[in-house]
Amino acid sequence: DTEVTQTPKHLVMGMTNKKSLKCEQHMGHRAMYWYKQKAKKPPELMFVYSYEKLSINESVPSRFSPECPNSSLLNLHLHALQPEDSALYLCASSPRTGARGTGELFFGEGSRLTVL
Amino acid sequence: AQKVTQAQTEISVVEKEDVTLDCVYETRDTTYYLFWYKQPPSGELVFLIRRNSFDEQNEISGRYSWNFQKSTSSFNFTITASQVVDSAVYFCALSEAPWRANSKLTFGKGITLSVRP
Image (cartoon, rainbow over all chains, first blue to last red; front, top):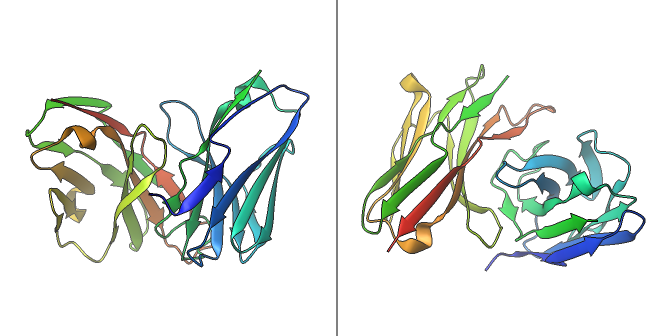
């Protein structure tokens, strides 16, 4: 079982909706990440948090808004998404706080998002 | 710029066969890390191994083994006596100089392995 828990596992939303994806880890890791993965593609880095501070934003559109309320939680707030944003959103944590996930990453099972 | 090439896109084997997944990388750094991840149908990426550039020793973990050869810039992964549960997408990844602020984990495109009973 993965030690990174993501909810919800599946989400369907309209383009005008506001929703949030949640991620939780209790391994004491101080680096947390959001990745986006389209079908049959490798994961693409979106955001990196290090010690609860946003350290990397890979030029992600503002309709995606990350939040790290504490060292165990990571949220991704979604607003006014487009159908092309439909993907698997993966959260990861790492014991190493290298800039962009240079240590071993522990991934959750992902939240599969469909935007209608 | 760093690059990871997984030339095989899909491999299908019968249970108990051995299978090797190839990974070739490019980097200008002398210090870097290589990784393999497994992504089963459930979706999560499972960390399998990390190898740093100074450690060319091959590694064996149960039915899994990894062959790292700097001379050919390859980090191949072999599954011995494959099982149906090995069916997944396997990603090779590279991270250059982790102390650099712009260091990044680069994934290959992944190999879909299907193991038939």
